[in-house]
Length: 482
Length: 129
Image (cartoon, rainbow over all chains, first blue to last red; front, top):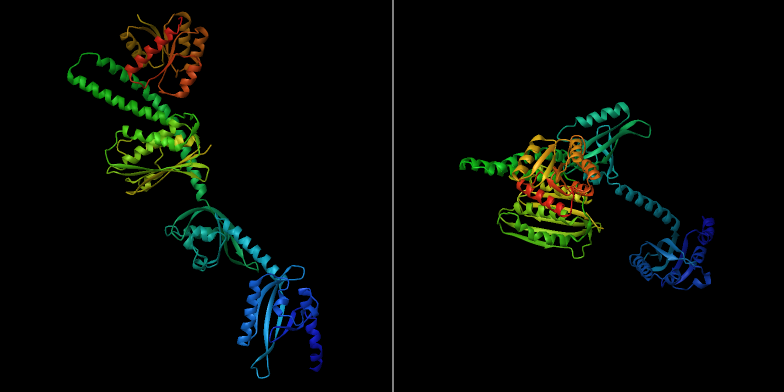
């Protein structure tokens, strides 16, 4: 024991931790070698100086200095050791991160404080190591959270979810904590039919892995199309412990495929319509021509009336064929720089020339002031605007408001929105709204919006519709800037 | 007789209608159904104007027009089509030297009036037929 007591000062002197011993006023009575090397001063420059002035000799951080002072006072008041972590600068200006411990030294009765000791453990290297691990974790987390279209989850042999990571939360809308240990059928049970899941797991059991195109279900009961890849999940001993699911969200892809399918269908319909219109025009021309000649002859009033009726009906066919040809025709747009605001302004007065219900309709314009120009065919685009505006009018037999909003969309597109407060379009009709011969109006030919669709496509733009029954419809057109 | 007209259309009812219509307008006409026949007629007979359908069984009306131009630089040729008002067809027809263009979808009275106007302008331009 006596031996240790002799060795003790030497041990402290050469310790890897920094040690300061202070009197009750905070002046340094003793410091070890580590303090000298840390601060870059010799012992004679340190002894009898205020401890804070010594430690913060190279640092300008007054905040940290005052906090450290408060920690020291705290430890004196409560007569207890206190820990404090703060960085100070060493003699070469490098920040050292140090974990400090302040210990008041009490008199024999444990009543008053006579002196105090400060021990500092340099944890700079440990901190750096932890930081780099933390940074790596953070960047991994960032990478995973940015892969939005993939979800990875694992189930155990009972079918309960044991891991719910990498995009799963954003894809399914479930919080990790809410779904862990729930049965995986909450994601797979579409319309109460779990046979799909049973089949998939059976395939994996037999073949080791299985990939399929299927649908999964979110927390809000939305169905998402996915490509699902399922594999064995083995434990550390190579024993089957469950199954790994990787789901790739195909919603965007499906949407694109549907658009391409629609576009192709329109092209085919266009060709068919052109051929059909031509075949109708020839006999119709003969009918109309013969009628015209008959009209020159003398007939009884009854026959004359019948001739007029035939003529008006033939004229109706003629006009319909004209519309069909217009839809079918792939007329190349004559491109010129256009300001969509001006194009819209020119169209507005034209609405009144189209026989429209005399309901009270207010048109509100919200035009982007700094609208860049697009390249387009003015007449074709005005036909589109007019068509949608007339539809909007007709959807509000009891009057209402048409809002026309233009804006710069991501500085790439001129966005034109025509918003009405009309009867709206039922959900089952929405997907067919741009198809030729589809109409919700009694006397519509169903060609207006399909012509609009073709025109906007030929301008490399997009046209979309959102609608709520009895609330109104919003048509959104985007046309690329020059 | 006002004009002597060659009608080229593969559909008999259309040809017959044109014949009757022109007769009532005091014009005489000869009609045929194919491009080949039309070229034969143009070579051996004199016409004031040719009414030429774009869709023919043996060759495209535009091709026939081109061949007529090799024979007659200035003979007025009016193109007719069931495709109606088609900018692309009109542009091509003009390029090959047609005098005018009529869509069969126009009202009949308008077709006759347009036809007569086209021939009048072509004649005034100094077409030697």
